[in-house]
Image 1 (cartoon, rainbow, N blue to C red):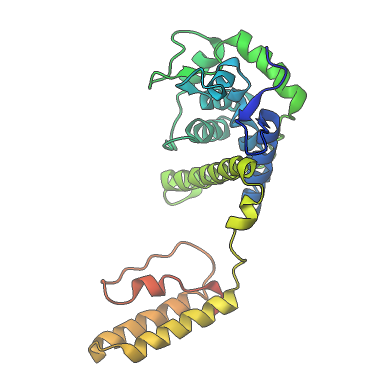
Image 2 (cartoon, rainbow, N blue to C red):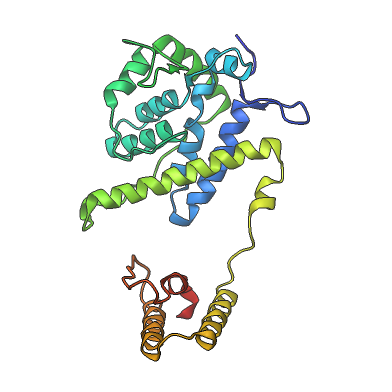
Length: 279
C-alpha cells in the first residue's frame, strides 16, 4: 500500500499533489466562496469529502495510466451522507453535490440504496456508466477512513438549511440552493487543481473587485451614447427610456428576485446590468 496518496499528477516541477493537500485547499476555497452566505461549514464539508475516493489503490493506478473508468466521487458522497445521516435533508444535498461534481447535477438525487451498496460492498462494484467505484465495501472504507482521519479533520456542521417549505416554490428554492453549493464546489475544485500547475492561477484569473460607482458611470455613459446615436422612432426611444427609468427605481428596492419582461429591441441586455449602487 502506498505511503502517500496523490490527487494530481506531476507538474512542471515534477511535483505531485497529495490528496490531503487537495482536500484542504479545496475546502478552504469552497468555504470562502460560501462565506458571503454564512455557509462556510457547508463549503468546508464539501471540499473535505469531495475527493475522499482518491484515497484508494484504484485511483492511484489512474494517475499511473494503468487504470481508467474509476468513479472516485461516489465514495466521498457516501461518506458525507453517512456522517450527516441524522440530518437527512442536508445529507442528501451534500451527497448529491459531491456525487455530481464531475458531471451533471441532479439536485434531487436521493439514491440512498446506491450509497448503502457502495459502503457495504453488496452487488456490483460498477456504477450505472460501468465505472468502478474507487472504494467499495466496509473493509476498504474502514482502511481509508483511518488514513483519512489521520490527515483530515471531520468538519463540524452547525448551520441550518433554509426553510424550503416556507418558500412560495419549495422545489425551486431547494434547486437554487443546491446549485449554489454545486457551483462553489466545482469552482473550488477546479481552482485548487489549476493552482497545482499554475500557482498564481487565482490571482491571474481573478478580475478587479467590482466598483459600483464606476460601473454606474459606465452604464449611464453607454446609455447616453446610445440615445445620441439612435435612429429609432421617438415612440420607441420613449419606451426604452421609460423601461430604463423603471429599472433604476427597482434598484432601490430590497434585494430579491426580479423579472424583466420586455420585447426585443427595448435594451433588455443593457438594462439588466443595472447596478445596485443606483440606490
